[in-house]
Image (cartoon, rainbow, N blue to C red; front, top):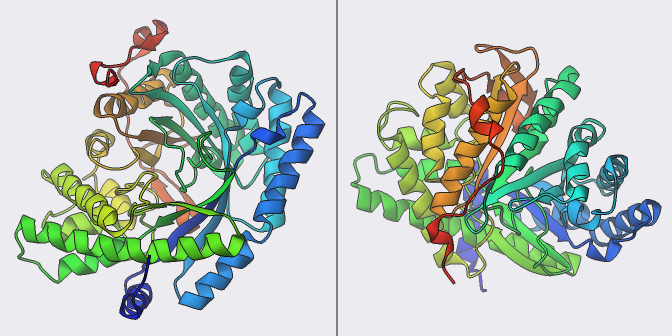
Length: 453
């Protein structure tokens, strides 16, 4: 792919003025050749392979960043789901793997490492059960390890037994990391229809159909889109759609340039560019502000879901026109704590968890970085997960839940993690019981749209 000099100059302008950055260059590493029944051998092989391939990942990304003048905010690694390579292990042995992942991450200087993951949408093996039970302790004993579990898919249905287990894991993680405002939950995602090439933390893992080692890139650019929309305050929706598509095109072109150069520098394959608009708590870098720039008083007003649907669709279209390697999640993220406009809307009472759920039906991922009262029952958390999974199941899209039942916190409080994780106001949750519903257990069958063969 050729990039014109003018395109690079325009990208530099976006970087300097409009908060544009490459949110992450994530190196995916296959660990299936590290499988051994001896945990010491497995741990040694994992550490060796991560440090061998990703040892210069940060250095190489920094050099590309300086060369092109485009900020790369995060350098990350994702791994084959650990439950796959460790199916013979027990809980304490899985924790050893998490700890060696964390050691390797610190050694090579990356921000986070993903792949402490399991895929249990249709059933749970004995090894996967041990793995799931290890998650709270693994997240509590590490700094950079992130975890995800896929509990449903359009092809398989929703594994309600796994949903209940993950609701308990979320509660346990919140308690065990309570001295740090339950931060362990910020590193844990529950998916439906998880994708294999997602570069974004905390849900990134290296899928089994991926190359041995690959670079996947995630771009950002809410500020770029926001400034483009502000230039046309009276444009009709067709014109607005074209503005967003053209802007997404530019963002994607820049992101792919950087991703390919980082891959080349590392001597590995380039995989995909994820064109998701990922906000930060910084002023002017907000999905909420984009929605308000379209003409709504605030996020949560009638019309919010329609505005988000327009934004998400145009981002995808613009990205597809710019690259033949678009993948990952690709759309618009709406994490509460990581978006200054979302935080404000929640604090003002304009945005509820129910409205957020409706918004997730038309955008990437789902209920992301949502803090709820620490005493929220396990079955209520299970209900939130199941509802979000149902949206993904029926619409054949990725949805997820990253909930923080912040220990000791109640509605009206907040938890502030600083940095990209931001500040999460504690949102109200319905107290109606879901106990009898989840006592049924089993699996919600796949929908008729799964029969596409």
